[in-house]
Amino acid sequence: MSAAIIDGKAFAARVRAQVAGHVARLAAGGLVPGLAVVLVGDDPASAVYVRNKGIQTKEAGMASFEHRLPAETSEAELLGLIAALNADPAVHGILVQLPLPKHLDPDLVINAIDPAKDVDGFHISNVGLLGTGQKAMVPCTPLGCLMLLRDRHGSLAGMEAVVIGRSNIVGKPMAQLLLGDSCTVTIAHSRTRNLPEVCRRADILVAAVGRPEMVKGDWIRPGATVIDVGINRVPGEGGTSRIVGDVDFASAAAVAGAITPVPGGVGPMTIACLLANTLTACCRANGLPEPEGLTP
Ligand code: GUN
Image 1 (cartoon, protein in one colour):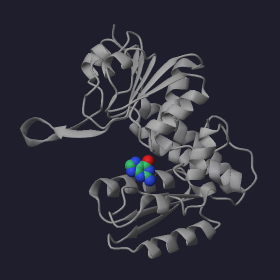
Image 2 (cartoon, helix red, strand yellow; image 1 turned 180 degrees about the vertical axis):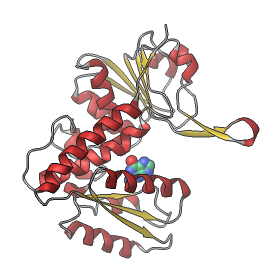
Image 3 (spheres, helix red, strand yellow; image 1 turned 90 degrees about the vertical axis):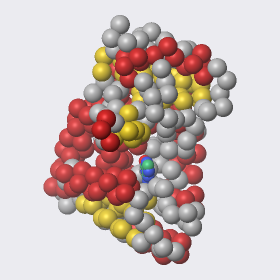
Image 4 (tube, protein in one colour; image 1 turned 90 degrees about the horizontal axis):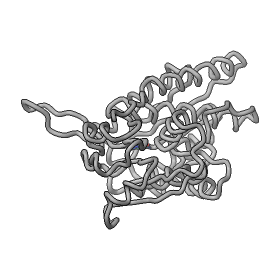
């Protein structure tokens, strides 16, 4: 069997176009959704992500506010900026890029963001709302994965889902979203016994462990849908490097029913969902109906 390739790049472009259409209608009425992105320090990978977020925010017709702070920024300074962004009516979404420099406590910083503007969905209020099935801001990467899965399967009810990875950014919220769609969910991780055997249960396998090409073809149930969240840089030929996922694509694609490639699968969905969340936050803040299909 050869798996269908799930084209996240094309799907993300459709989400961005849908967001841009809504933004244009809001802007015609004088309301421009705004996203503030805060980058502390000079982590090169984070700088690339932040630049791409700014570009795509503007392309969608939204206002982009970028705040680049030096690595030695104090906690009080960062909290002061967040308080100002919380109070700014032109800002509907706030994202503080992680990881933060070591001297800053990410939990304290994230929980200082107004939950209604927390477009990452990392604030404890949003985590609790998602966990109790209430209306929340939902983390972007798992939301993107859910959109791809619903697009492929329609209803996910009753499906066996295995999520490898228990991070607050992907693994845990992914499991909550799948549970919300009535999957039978297993969260596996680095200490799980018989991991390949656990994975073979899955109709839906989500790999978010950060280990290059860890998931092999013989871990996959024939016909399963495989969502690869990994973005790992590994040495390539002739001193170059290349990006691979957490799934060994060649062996997995021979067994799976459908699979996301890396790059071009989940990756582009993350920023598309960030834009969707910013639009949702703007609509909620202004008492407007939420666009359909952009929230869980
Ligand atoms: N760093 C890596 N992924 C993310 C993300 O989704 N949000 C934020 N704020 N930082 C990140």
